Image (spheres, one colour):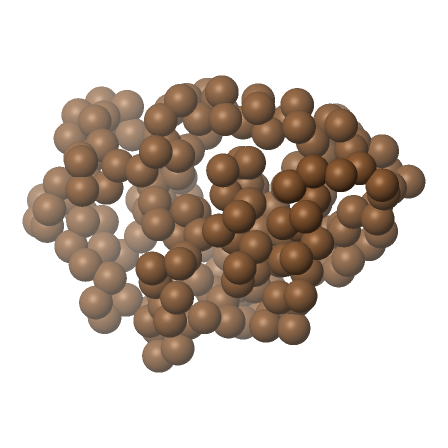
Length: 195
């Protein structure tokens, strides 16, 4: 389970991932997918399926499919990431998370977090250089850029059900629109067998 809270005016330290049971990578703990921005597509397509969901208002969202909902991410062996240098940005920035409100959130249930011991990850709402990732900067603009790109293909008839996990439907694109992002999406689908 994860619980993200606003880091504004908060301070946290981070000890280490050593000895952690990798709950953040466990599908049983809710780590099934994460929303993508356009900058994520190329890196993610190498190891994970990129799939689509339709939000409550009908907006199309691109997602990385991280697990099958019953098991760990397929790249976790003995609670360690075997693609550490190629892991998606959602994994790189954890326990931090970006948000469309341009605030940075933190999973205060991460076992490596503390308000007393470890190295500073957030001090009075400021992310330390060691933990900062470009995805956290000006996320709202990146989110909107992604939204406008996906609007070009947002027609439900151009999608086919790819899989359903924990009652969530994930789709693949079967339309005719051409773009490098669609190419990355199609390439990424070959990673389904890893889940």
